[in-house]
Structures are given as structure tokens and as C-alpha cells.
Figure (spheres, rainbow, N blue to C red):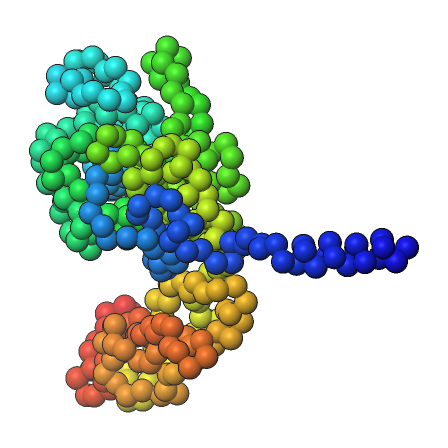
Length: 379
């Protein structure tokens, strides 16, 4: 019995000595790919990075920007999902992954988006670009303008589909930025979450290149890419318990490697972080106006923002509303009346203006006479 007891103690000791691996910490060496970023989609906060601004080719991840401009055109009403797109000779000439469009062939915008998002079709991407802007050249110019507007300083687009081309570069950080912009158009999830579908009335089957759709809990998209210059790349989006993450991997040595790294990034994010929407807890009451043509003015606060922190640290979040009990006329719509501040410990996380919703004229002889005249007209 003593020998068994000693053996049990020895085994327990040896087990304690075995190193345990947890997603509570993630180092650059844990990610085999040369460049990677994990971003919280709601706040835009970077939760992990490895060579985030290293300029690299990104293959069909380029289509994230292509789809962003297409979805903007759809949401603005410039184009409709049931509009018919006619493939040009240029679109039909694309190589690499495609849906074998023929010159003059017609498909709906809806099917072209599906082909681009699911099958990573280079020909469909060009056909959409030409439909939105008239030519791929003009569309690429719009892509670069959008990239500049988003602060994508590491990026230059030379085409709309990601085929290798000298000077066509981006970074993991910039891919995260444009991915965050694309998923603002929630309709895109209707396409990026498709595993298998069909085109041409069932004649053409398409299968999503994002294998995480079949293996990762909460995955919603977004786009894969592979070329000789870029290696294997992915921008993976996933949601769990209110946390929305974007994992970008560039330059992996294989498709399996990119999926492994993306899953590791997402696991780390979901295991260690939580996000909270910063919202005013109570409705704002009207504020008394002294010397005005009306006794009070309604106020509002645009307080839409998110806070992402390590799990367990969000409990100390506090909000402070600072508004006066009374203000003096005149008041102009949009005037800053007060502020709403959010703090975590001693750090201010965010602040928002409380503004007047309407004009309130100062009470004087002219304004009283004007009000009297308007009352008489109504009679």
C-alpha cells in the first residue's frame, strides 16, 4: 500500500511538472504565419498582432474591398440585387479561380456576389466592378480612395480580384480594417456563410473556400485567398456572446496552416476578452430653459460605442452624466448642453456630447409679437 501511495504522489508531482498550454496567452511564435492580426470588430481594438504592418500580397482577400464597394452600391440603391450583369470579354478572360463566365453571359448581381464571396471567382469580381463603375480601372481607383478613407496606409490596389501583380500590396492590419468595413453591411453574411450552393439554375455548383465554416463555432465568414506571391491567406470573422472578432492571417505556407492560425487567434480572443456596448442607462429628460419662448428643450446623446477589455475587467465600468439643471435662451439645435463620460478605474474610456434637439428663441418683444401673429392666423 505504501508503494502504491508513493507512486500516486510521484505521478501527481510529475503531472504538475508537465507544461500546460492555454489560450490565455498568445505569442508571435504560436502563430506560424508571417503576419497576423486579431481585431475586435465592434471597437476596432487590436487584441493581437504579428508584423501587422508588413506589406504583403494578399491574393483574393482583395475581394473584401471589392465586395465592400459592391455592398455600398446595393445599400445606397445605385444597383439592385436583381439587376442583370453582362460579362465583358475582359471579365471572361480572368484566370485562376472563376465560374467560367463567357463573354456576353448574364447573371444577376445577387449571383455575381455569391460567386465572388463563395467561390472566389475572379471573373465575377471583375464583372461586378465593371457594372458598378463602368470599368475595372475606375473601380480600382475607387478601391484605393476607399482604402485611404479607412486609413489603410499600407495598401495599394492594382486590380479588383487579387491576382498577383507588381505593387498590389496590403498588410494584415489593413485587411482587418477593410474587413470591419465590409461586415457593417450585414447582408454580406448571407453570402459568406454559404457552404455549398449553385449557379446557372443548378448547372454550376460552388463550394466555399473557407473550411472554418464546417469546423469553427460561431464563424460567419469572411474570405480566403491563395497565390504564389501571397501564400495562403484568410480574413476570418466569428461571433460569440456579443463579441465579434476578425482574425487575419497572411502568407501561411498552406491552407491548413492558415486555418490553424486563424482558429488559434479566434480561440484566444473568445477565451480572454469581452465587449460591452456603451449606452446611456436612463432616458434623458428635457432641460429647463430660462428666458425662452418655451420652458424646456429636449436633449439627446449619440452614445454608440463599444468597450473591449480582458474578461472580468468590465465590471468597474462607470458612466457620469454632466448636464445643467437649467440653461438660458437662445438655444440652437445641436448646441452642446453637457456630456456623458465612461470611465474604467481612473481611465476615461469614451465621452459623448449631450446636445439640444431643437431651437428655443429668446423671449423678447419681437418673438412674442411673432407668436401672437401666428396664433391669430391659426384662428
